[in-house]
Length: 193
Image 1 (cartoon, helix red, strand yellow):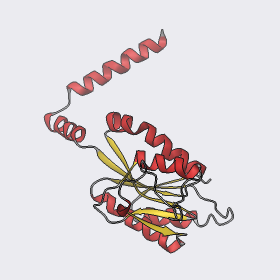
Image 2: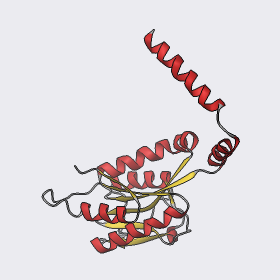
Image 3: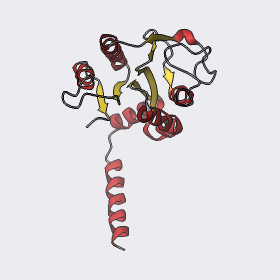
């Protein structure tokens, strides 16, 4: 019974807050609902953790769009053996479903990001010209890719998600990558402690 009372009072407060909403605020809410906010992700590391993340986002892509008005897109996927980066700002971004399929292809060892496999699975990418492939990206190349992610801030949000092996004494190279992202105003998430 106590839970029902708390729910009842919570709902009542929410209704009152909505009634007091002015016209301008209501218009802002309507415009937000009409055009989704892009969230452009750069994955650093494409091992089990980030592949699982990519699959989860792909599975929840429509719910995120419907309930949060958030359109998840990817700017780059960086792994030790190779990197995919959207070739130019304004090009088609990699979709959540494409990166989810890419995660499955990499996990099954049928595809590698370094371009050494014969063909790109059709459910991953229809037009390979939209991505730039880098074999074994250097730390400087990774920092450049992170800096390029900041172009997403013009019409959306940018996020770097790092899940790579690190030197636990110094935290490198993850610390440098996260600092670079933060320096450019990019949201940053680390799987390392």
